[in-house]
Image (cartoon, rainbow, N blue to C red):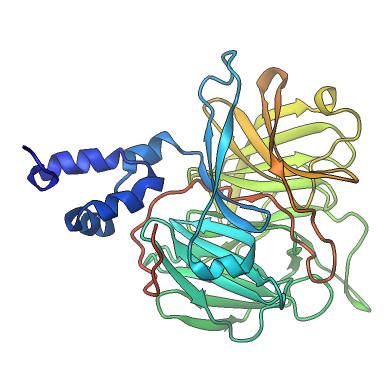
Length: 399
């Protein structure tokens, strides 16, 4: 009788390449040989290619995995409801609320707050290896701090950028960077002519992070906002540890319009745009994207009023989305509120007026206050999950 240890390496690798990523725990517990193999080589590669729509999301302040099946949706078949599963990363996450999640190059950054004390903390997690690291700050985390995850392209060392709001203006006033490999923080000497608002979360692409920003106007009384300033695109280069020049967006975007960023296979940037109080939704993708250069082409445009009624608008400070370039469809996520209820919702939009609304379950109503400003769920990572062997050298949690 053939047993597991009798199988050839080639056959073992072929078998394990087809294993779902969520079954890694079972693979590692099968035998010591498979456990060692999974920690030194990337398994599940075939499954990861087939299921590019495996992502992480924040739902009701819990970290969840989300998987989609878009096969056949434009051929007369119905959209298959997504599979959403709460993830237990480490036991200590059971005692905190996850407010934001960022993903870059196989690593995830979770921003959490204590349920009782409202204290913010950071957790770096490698989902494939099951490794975690709690990060100690140089000083207390502020509820309005912003974060970005990226890496140095010269040595692939991963870093976290922290934007500190040291006042009450909801604008960045200080920048710090954390090197995961050396477990150290440094203050960056950056003077910015652009404001990155607290609710505009960045998107990682090729190790850098892109943000919406608006011009900082200097008057006699200091930096102030002017009426409806135009927004631009700004890139933080993790290799040079500085911001690139302002980049144009494909539309004339004002800060109160709906605008959100996404990425496609770590190759392209996408932007979703909807003018204030208008029903036309546009999505553009890049044909070229670098810290100092960008070019755009239209991807999708749809008038949602026939499906949603007059006055519907995606939240300008909360919508998350991603696209399937081959099928030319987009999934947009946000919370739909009424006086009595609140639901996480996915909107599937496509060419020729394709529109479908899918409920993702009841949601905890956002609490708009000084301690919760900028929190809006569901927040879905725009980057699809790609397994990584990057070790973060700290406590481990099972997959």
